[in-house]
Length: 290
Image: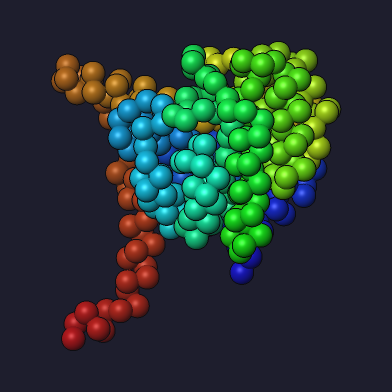
């Protein structure tokens, strides 16, 4: 059977856009897979909110993130890109992060050039490390892979915010030379900037579409025509779930009818996996009777 990294490489070989809803736990990843998408990304923003109830400001530890990666990869059978933030320390920490994520079953790991503790890419206060430190992170990630980690490297730069698009593109181009498989220039502010990113950088590029964020919300067709290989939607599912939960909580508090807002109990059980469990466990009825 091909590894998840091999599956992702094959997806990227196709000359098309891969729409990638982002997950935050095993259940959201299962729903994405059940809906027919090719891959997912474990959003740091959404995972921090759902796991520890805190903003994505570098508060989750490496161990917490690694545990969440393992929960997700154990629940699905399609490629997961994991958010490795800044690597959780120096270049040696980056190596450990990449190796750990590969062992946990992630198809790719994102490593970025922000100062630690990092911030969400569409919030104020971002800063990036020097070029040398940024390049060392990607070099270390590639070294971990050459040492046996079966994983792709998604290299992200947030340099656009402080230093402009040209600096971001120069950094990303060097990331590619150092072994990155996918390039991610965070938060271009115009369609023209998105076009420049795809025109000037080699290999697969990822667009990050945050509803209400800084990057234009283009259609899938427009993103594909510009040249992006992946369109990530990091908050779409979490924002939808939060709004639905608050609506239902308001109805419950007011003792108002709410059945129309709820998924049918039978469908809930099916999607979570009760039916699969019962089907498999039926093979062992004899041993249960014994």
